Amino acid sequence: MDINGLKGRIAEALVEGILRRAGYQVAMAGRESQAQRLLKVGHDEYLPDFLVWKTIEQSDHAWPSYRVAEVEVKYRSNLAHYLQQRFSAEFSEVVTRWPELYFIFVTDNPEPGRSCFQAVAVPAATGQDPVTTVDLHALERLDIHRKTVEEYENLVRMIFPVLGSSREAPRRPSVRVGATSAPIQLAR
Image 1 (tube, one colour):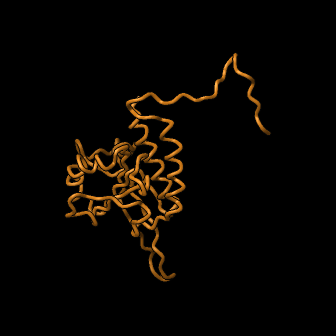
Image 2: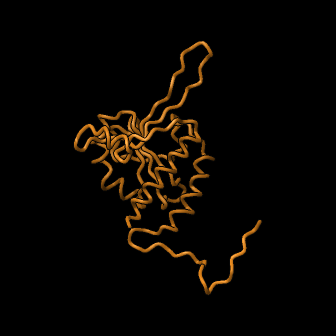
Image 3: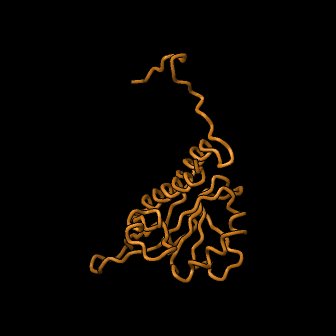
C-alpha cells in the first residue's frame, strides 16, 4: 500500500475542508479529478488540485466580485528537505502558467513553532531563492482564520501517526475483536 499517496489524498481532503470553512467554493480540477481525465488537454498538462472562489464584500448595487485562486496540495513528511531539494524545479515549471497559484503543504512533522499547514503563494515567491513557506493562516489574501487551521492540525496529529510511514507497517489497533475477547458493550 502507498502510505504517502494515502496521506496525500487525506491532505487534499483536509485542505478542502479548511477552504470550505473559510467560505470558499471549491472545485476539483487536478489530474486526479474525474473531469480532468475526461477532458485531458495534453500529455502531461499540469493542473492545480483545486479552483477556489469566494465572494468579496461589496455594496448592494454592484455586481458581485470574487476572489479566485488555484490551489495545489502536497503532503510532505519532511517539508524542509523537499523545499531544498525538489521544489524549485516543480515551482519553475508552473509559475509562468499559473500566476495566482498557491501551494499548500501538509506535513505531520512541522518544524517547532510551525503549522502542519504551510503555503507558498506564487506571486509573493517569484524571484525568491530559496522559496520559503508561511503558515497557512498567515496568508492574508486567503483570509483563513488561525482557529480553523488549528482544528484541522488536530486531525493531522490524530490521523497521520496511525497510518505510519511508507517504511513501516501501520500500527494495529489495540482493541481485539473475536471469539476470545470479552463482549463489547455499546453505550446508549
